[in-house]
Length: 129
Image 1 (tube, rainbow, N blue to C red):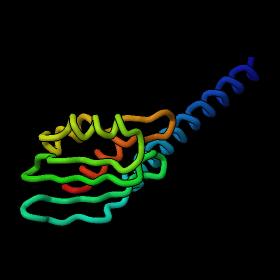
Image 2: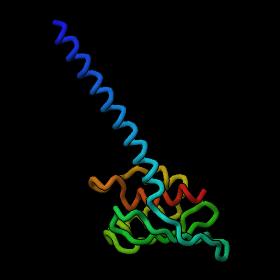
Image 3: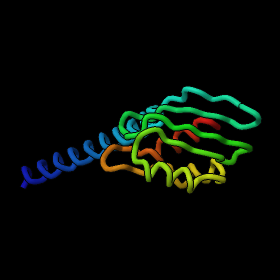
Image 4: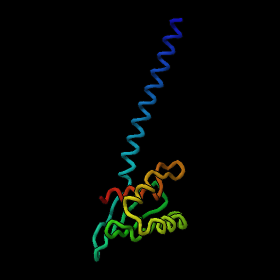
């Protein structure tokens, strides 16, 4: 009986330790995810904020170009990636506030990559605040 109790206790400790490792790994992945992109240009041209970013290597697109005026997204273009999806994202968030776009796109996953083109766009937009 003592062995069963000890074995059960040891098993429960392993489960707890595994859950803790998973929680730490998830937090680390979330921190890394935000840093995976790089903003290569951020300037104001005729009252329009023009931003160019390179997304994570985990996604198919190679560049995201964004134009924002008064907190409203004027244009988003993806270089490479899935052409239909990239055009669709740009069309759907045109004239949307930055906050609303982040709310809708943040955390979208593409397969098991841990991110996606829309998620990378949301991360860039969050970094612009």
